[in-house]
Amino acid sequence: MKSFCCFASGENFPGELNGKEMPVGFFVSVFVNAVDANEAESKSLDMLLKHPALALIGGAQVPSSASISFKVVHELAHRVVNPKVTEFQFFEMDE
Image (cartoon, rainbow, N blue to C red):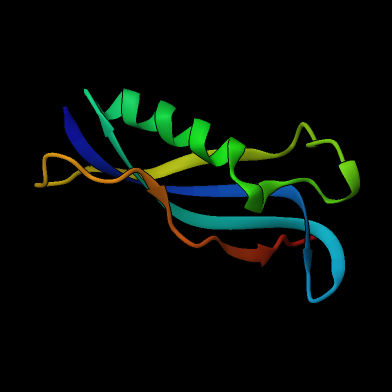
């Protein structure tokens, strides 16, 4: 088993910034243990979709335009890491 850091970007998720509901994007890093980079992405995506920071405001549905992509999947020198999601950095989507 190898360890990976997956840097993800999300766009067009229902969110709230400065007390105002709006579509938001985010950047976040996810640390996982996996056999290869593909499995690391899959595990990271699963962790992100279950994360409370992406809980939908007021029961809103995720729009079809919402997306998560992995910008970098980097194998770490360590053999085992504690799987975790770092702090989300949210931003307002451009109109």
